[in-house]
Amino acid sequence: MARPPEILISKADIQARVAELAQQVHQDFQEDIVIKKLVIVPVLEGAATFADDLLSELEVLGSDVRRKSIQVGSYGNERESSRQPKVLTQFNQAEFKGAHALVVEDILETGHTLTEIIRVLTEVAGFTAITIMVLLAKEGMQEVDVPVEYVGFRIGQEWVWGYGIDDQHYGRNKKDIWYFPQNDVA
Image (cartoon, rainbow, N blue to C red; front, side, top):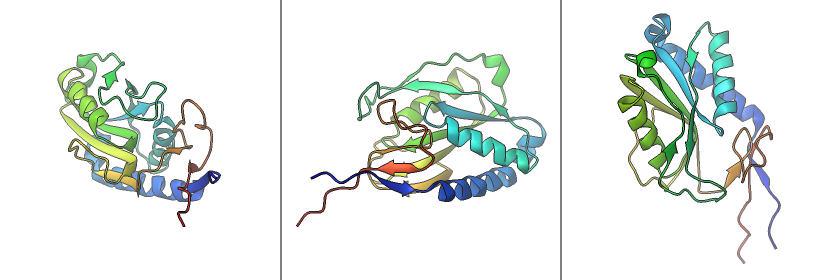
């Protein structure tokens, strides 16, 4: 019999970690923030809540940064990545030439989506530097090497939802991150 879903990461733990990450970004990018070169680039829709909370924490620290969301399709209605992500957002290269993108992603799994985002942000949008932050990094699933500088939490290969992350378009509104635990094997 399937076990009911459980909380994997609580709202309190998420909020504490987001505050820590904001502090790190505030310190690491102080020069880029002052000269208005840092742009937060949340990956929609899953990372929107994470990015909103990160931006709120940065504001508390006195950091005023730009935001430009990016939309990417790689799952559709499935629970497995197509491994052929498509960036759906249009960019004006003149707007971001010479800027530094801090890509804020919900989950690092295979790495294909982040690889395509990096390509588009450098080749199409004109960013000169890209830094990656993920809320969750799934252990043992990465197929493509992607440099991730900031990780909120490392997790197993569970299917998760909540805190902006959906389960086939449901569950984004949950404040905690949930998962289905595996059945106990006797």
